Image (cartoon, rainbow, N blue to C red):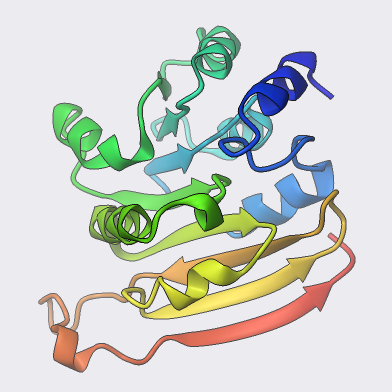
Length: 210
């Protein structure tokens, strides 16, 4: 375990979701939910010491971009050092809620995938819903918001998304819910209206192997 990660957890236990980084099995499971052949822009909220970020960087296309939003200054500096030689990766010591601002500054219209390990359960309701709205708006139609969390409470707030698929992944300490929220595609080349949006569907499974 990275010593810095442990120290930052002790200092900010409510900002960092777990006392240990994600297991290799969890990292691989989450990465499998991303279609790297089509992903041009990926954003990650709360990458911590970069265990998921490294796997994403290893798999993503040479012309893809990865935006890492890490609020903790020490972890942000660690990420900067890790990825200093990779021009595809942008480490941002900013709140995840600043995603729309960063996208506009960089000329990015949409993200294909947004990944998050931040503990949504501790966020105030208004901040939680505001971040979900910004996340939904940032995604390309057909894009996905992928989270890994100790609890699965976020699904009751993420009704703006068109579909949700969850699994309870045991090969991690602690076990995690991995949930993929989907943003529906355009119908007849136009955005879907709220009245025509399908009810959110959820598929829940428990898996023990990667």
